[in-house]
Image 1 (cartoon, rainbow, N blue to C red):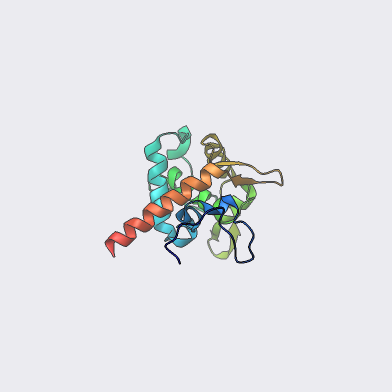
Image 2 (cartoon, one colour):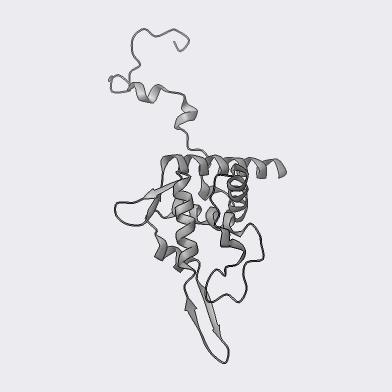
Length: 175
């Protein structure tokens, strides 16, 4: 019966022994909350707060003087925009690895208004994209991909999933 203790290795239905790797804690094998499962705005805000609180993200001196693209009229009004941009960049790399400076400028581009002439698309600032990626590399959250661009490290993926779990838990408490 079921309550009898089994002697010997666990066997599958075929009679073969079950590999020891699958005998670990079942919670470890269950998929947890990932970045794709939570609200993106809340996740980016939480990750930006984490990056700011850690104090390890190297913020350039010129962050209060710069526009984020030639299509922008003004500099960003939020004083923590660099942390938010870094968090958003890491989220984009989580969703699509292998993105580099060029693809980040396309993601953060926008409509360039030309007065009475028709508007055209304009890419975002390459310097800002490059400095954000370099700062995240120093944190060991991303690394250079041999196929081009940057990709998340295992430590970066772990941090992002942990923060996504915290955001999901906070949302669960409020609901």
